[in-house]
Image (cartoon, rainbow, N blue to C red):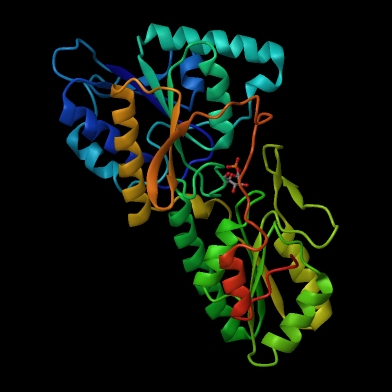
Length: 374
Ligand code: F6P
């Protein structure tokens, strides 16, 4: 069997661990060639397709552009702990939003898929990538999906590859900021990623002992925020730690966006808005920081390494059972298999957000943390 694998969307820790697990499975079986597609699904659309052989069993006559019949042992070992993605990725939007662009993309990907002689494609991605692959399935491309995203907002899975490592990085950073805040007697406001989901903010906020956690799912009241810090936090100690999800907002105020250096509009800027407001309201020395892409580039933590192994091995079994059109997910701590998402029924994209009354939010509130309004 000849399987392609690609990583799409934003990079995260644990992608390389998934690739390594797939290669190890193929080597153990001895009957599977693994072809890595570069730059997400876009590598298949290129002519010739951008790819490299990750593993090839003896005698299948292949040779990658690196001149090897697969990854050497040193690289394979390194992949377990290496951040980012060895295959590179692309986060450039959905070509199917435009009918003509979508039709051309479909034809290009199909040509690449056929020219490589693939029996199937393992797609490691977030919701956006799986929506693109769902469209391609309609042209006969055989897909198995693995969810990854630091935001943990993949709709069908309680955990996606990359989330716990991002929480680990954010927690460490928040604790560093907090010790500086304590030393200077300041209110420190830190913005973390997550798009429209508050998982990173909630989990890193609790793990770092934050006094306030502002979440997209629970718009905050400026008045209640200031009051909480004044009467419940700064009455007891000389400093405070406020964690802001990038998608957090006050009441009916709009989301904050900034324009990246290359002109893309992205969520961000809420920490500075909150810090400016709190300085005015509390007359306290206040600083804001944005963690940004630092959250994406760590080594995978053990949870992500294990999740990578569990997802990849199940995906490989599914491929050999010819159960394409499926997705591996985690539910109640167990790896399960669901039908691959249907792009159309989802309206192109769907993300999982926190329930405003999620038990973990309630736990934070029970400890006196202000988490916005339900
Ligand atoms: O979806 C992952 C994520 O890191 C979000 O948390 C963040 O908003 C976005 O990607 C940043 O995208 P980019 O890498 O394109 O700047």
